[in-house]
Image (tube, rainbow, N blue to C red):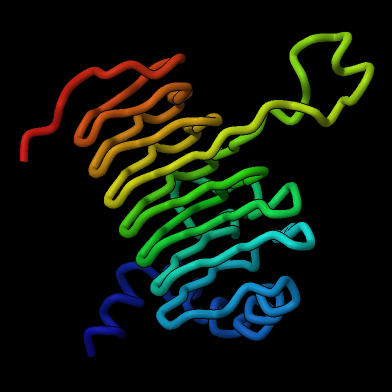
Length: 205
C-alpha cells in the first residue's frame, strides 16, 4: 500500500526504479568488464563510464548510489558518471554509502573517498593537471602534468558543479558549496565556497 501511494505521488521515481532493475545486468557487466567488484546495496541509475588503466586499482564499498541518467536527479545530469585511473599504479578508493550524480573522478596518483560522502550533480574530482603549465614543457611532453593525492574524509558533502583539484584534503563533515573550486585543504566541519574556495563558516555539532 505504501509503495502504491509513493508511486502515485512521485511516478517518476517508480519509473526510475523499474528502469534500474531492467538495466541491472548491463550495469553489472560494465563493472565486471573493468575489474571492479560489485558490492551489496548498490543502486545504479545508468551504467557509468569506467576507464581503468592496466595495473591500477578501482575499489568501491557497499551501498553505492550512482546516477547517470538525466532525469535521475531533479538537478539534471549533464553527463554519465566517469570513473578513471589515468596511470599504472593509480588508486581510486571509494568507501561505503557514497552517492554521486554525473560525477567525473580521475586519479593519476590516488584519490580516496571516505564513507557517507555525497558528491553533488556534475562535480569533478581530479588529482592531476593533465598537462604542464609551461608551454615549453607541453611541447616536450603534453601529458606530464603534475599530480598529487586527494583525500576526502567521511561524511563530506560536495555541492553540485564543484571542482576538487590535486593535493587537497577535505576534513570529516566538511561542506563544499555549489560551484566551488577547491585548491587547498578544507578543515573538518568547515563550509567552503567560491573560486578559489574559502572557509565561510564552521559547522557546530
